[in-house]
Image 1 (tube, one colour):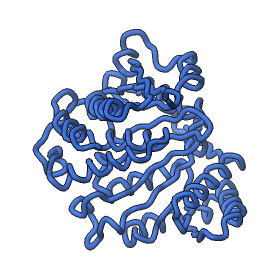
Image 2 (cartoon, helix red, strand yellow):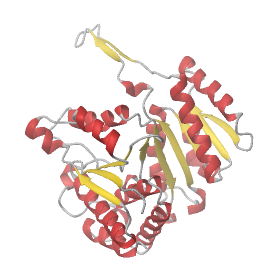
Image 3 (cartoon, helix red, strand yellow):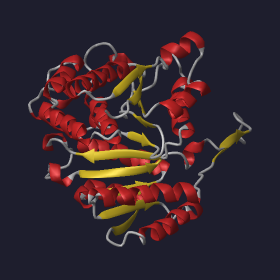
Image 4 (tube, one colour):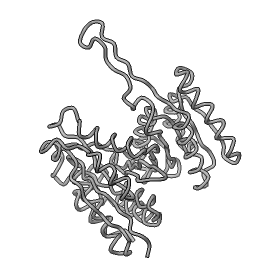
Length: 352
């Protein structure tokens, strides 16, 4: 019997709680049906906990996740009662940085042609992945404000790129392409304007790419990349880019596949604990009303199962989600009439 896989569940805020509940329901069905060696533990970090006792993400808990868990599944964070989103920042970005989750993995895969905003594009045309560097760039929080609130105010924000950080995300993209039989890797930057950090990206991409002669190498400035994603998305297989551009490009990709309600993501440390989250917001005004679309949360569960060594169950989830959409067993945003719980039930009844 394989060793137990320990999974931490953080439900999030708002609709994050609603849709995470459905994803966990699917996980428990698969665990029971296939006798999977999963230990599932729930944690209450989120806005309610923060408002009660100011707890965001204790250092001891980060160490517990690092040393004792294989994966963390986290729901959307955000609550208007915490206007500065201190809890969301400390939990989400804190785990990304402290667990060194340097790979942000975003598959972009169209499940139904009717959901695509582009004309004359099929499911075969939109099927690529984006790897976003997840621990450097403009998101490291280096900078400051001088003379705040005065006419002479100055704000700086540092864009930090290290050789180690750039090389490991680019290498991860090439290794993924090699493993999955993809034939092309596209790197995107803005080296024509951002000279220093993106010169580093250019050089490392060329050096690492030379180790993979069987894979085609391609480069786009990020503005050209976004135009091509709209014009001819079928040309892309694997895209790798920096933190800021990856944040933008992946949301564009999500829209191509049918919106954020179908966008799954993984925050991966290949040698440690990884974290998985749907990328939509917490939408507090819709919480508890049984109307939120849980499919992104369920697809994110599939990514986690794939990472844990169960790709067949990820494929089963993808197939069940595709059937839910095509048969209108979905929420209103996808053309159906079901509620959150009923969509979760449909997936539970159709995974194999």
